[in-house]
Image (cartoon, rainbow, N blue to C red; front, top):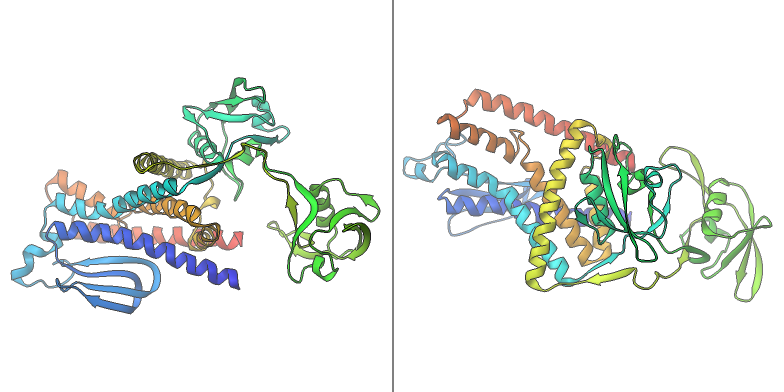
Length: 450
């Protein structure tokens, strides 16, 4: 329950920031273009807080934090006094209307640059992209990529982190192959050709790296207990933090994965644990509890976390930059996120990426809660990612979104006359239905993940 409220609070905070930025873009440009703004609202429904400025614009914070809007003076919506018609949105030139509508997504992109620049100035901790293991029979194995090799380049992109590697691989969707430059333990560089012909992201929650057979290096988990979940099988059996698991049912346990496999197969079965506690060996009877995995299969659950070995020297580094370099890097990263987002939309349409990978409000809430718990840098990175996605999504040519309005205004620019009201109304209905369908589908995916 605590996680629910934490995620909800983080979601409201993140969405509130991003919606305010988006709507402020519309608001600021509208004011500059001489349009009278009647209301600036964050959220929908019943107002929780409202006030007015000297221009008589009403500012509202409403009860349903799932968006916002800027209401402008517009003769198509309300009666406008003759002395104020020059202040209405519809009275402005098509170029002015395009600027006002495009300002929302542009504000999201600018915010992403600022958030990422702040992140780089604070300092970003990253892990070198060193391969831990390669899945047998995978595309990576066929390419000759080996454990302990560091990935330094994919295609034309230099790779410094696993995030770089993931983005570069996702950009290669739909291609026949991509070159991967690796550095061996002897500091020799080798170029591998990774076959990505027919490669698709068609499995829910399977990372691109895993689907190609690449498992990043991570320090090994030991058999020493670091933490115990409350009311778990481990707590009920009186296992203790700092206990080291030596054997189960007389069988020596050599690594953490062996223990995990054994526990998974032993739901509601009594097991005799031999644990080293201080300087003596204790015998403890443990009955793993039962729970269902994502596929609905019953599995055993012990409720312990292991002590993990330290990272080898040089594997983890913190990179920070000065203000100008941070802005440059923030701009480059934002552009990469924008192009990747459009690529992913195209891949969704062509089937290279499964619609199962779509996330809705619940997925965003979980991501927000997790990023906030990791600290400022992670939250800034999350905000930048969602801000870019919000900007790109709003540019889609659906009539209920900014992109749909832009589509109509661009047509008007070339035709020298507006699209008919009847056509616009039909488009808005179709766009609303498509948007509702996408939202419901994304929510269904979120619930399936839960």
